[in-house]
Image (tube, rainbow, N blue to C red; front, side, top):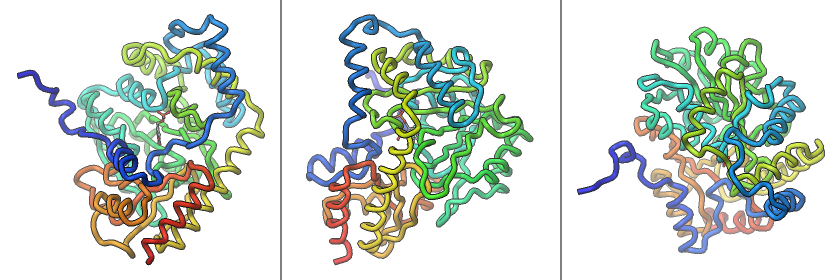
Length: 388
Ligand SMILES: Cc1ncc(COP(=O)(O)O)c(C=O)c1O
């Protein structure tokens, strides 16, 4: 009998699909998946529409991305981080950051290599490593401040370690690694000759005095780092699935070779629009942060008033809250309980930990605040039912 491959046996259905389905069936307010519930800026949508309508952009784009978008990605890296990216050979445009990470894993690691993953992690990393024939090796962040123990990181390195996937600002904890932490990680990467796949999709989502320090900007790190970005996050256009990987030409050549046989090329009109969007003035990026800071406050106040224990995230658009005061069962059970009792859906972070460290999820659940202010207020009001 024809059956699915063993390779995909362990993957199951993502928790996002499950929670989205449950939220839909019950009419719950969905603070699960990290997708904004508003439209992208009108001028960007207009640029996409124009690109499709006026012709010339409805057939395959160049495989590595349009020249204009690759140049815009390089310009953005120079404008904000003073990184000198070669605008053609140093950038590959991918179908979202998700494909960028997969192409980087496939293009920069060999079967049998170990790849270090920081827990909790974005859920595509591990399947990506496994599909590439690699071995994930886990190093946990430690709550409540979500710090990385550098001795644990060092101890995780073996002669087979090839790469580390490092995400800052971090989903789901909201941690933004400090310069001192990034430098310590960089020392370990250089000492053991590791490649860094830097998932920096939330680079502009920072609060209070948090600063984003790109791994590629640290001394000695550019040559061993590829950086993954996402237009979906930056321009509230997650449905367009446009992302990129930039870095030194030798490593980007590896990423590009994998990319050409995953998607070959990315949606062409979207690339035209995102190229223009990346050139938006600084005021766009400042306004984006201000908007999210207000949303963070609404949800934070709501969660605290409802008896959850949580800290203000330093970056990204999630709050990982502890529900221990309300419920003692595991996160997967609580997620269902939460929907039933409050009509609010959130993501149990168990899927962001390896099976052997699943207990580290403790009694936490992840809420996304990339939602309209009124919806966040309504969700906050409903969450108070937990305290009743
Ligand atoms: C840390 C992290 N990396 C990558 C992605 C994927 O980004 P994209 O939608 O561009 O594929 C996400 C999306 O939530 C994310 O949180």
